[in-house]
Image (cartoon, rainbow, N blue to C red):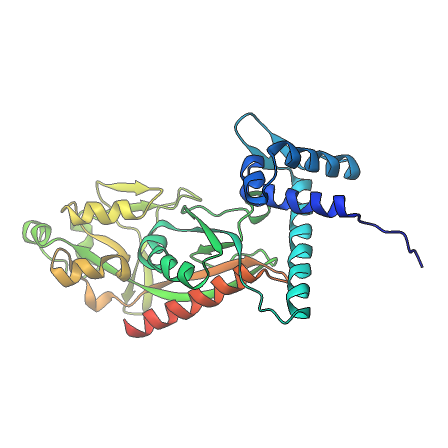
Length: 310
């Protein structure tokens, strides 16, 4: 049996400062959070790099970024430190209070109309958790970009990610009363050929998103045409529709207020009912951090309540 100590107090402290710097993406922020100097954080990271023989951060004058080896080391160390904290709290009978930085990536419409309005309630319940919400319609790389969670429109092929469905969001076709008065109201799928159908290009592929409508043999994907196209943010198409540019297919939850106040009108109801899923993604991990567990449970609960009421 090897009785030699593998980690002394200095090394454990260095690992903690390294994880803090990786989490906050800043030596200065890590130093402020830990109550030490930025030089102390830098020395701790250098100490680890010398011990491991690899670079953990790419440093520039403006920012630091984990290397591939640094990210892998951070994931393992962060998990190990979380286990130590949980073990200590369990041993002393204390409840493990979620704390730390939670980084989440999500599409713009789901962020604005579903998740961001819930964050104040989440932080009211878990005030020690800080939330970094990144709004983007592109797929993020968990390994490269250090996200804890992501919300996307479908489950990925990546088997290293857990996918939990949040909801099937209903799609509707809408336009302003002024546009319909000017151009007429479409009564059939063929009528769409004579209308301005606002287009949206998927950011990850640049591919134009077809509209999904109910045909005689079930739901079909249709390639519509029009003089307007948007990319990057689907809310651009909604704004165009709100200003009378034409017809647009979007999620009901985005335009439900417009439909209630009459600013937009739902058309093609007989061909509606299609939906698209939204899923919550996070890496596999037997020891998921308390802040991630708390947010996953919170979001699933809140959205289940909201969709049940709608």
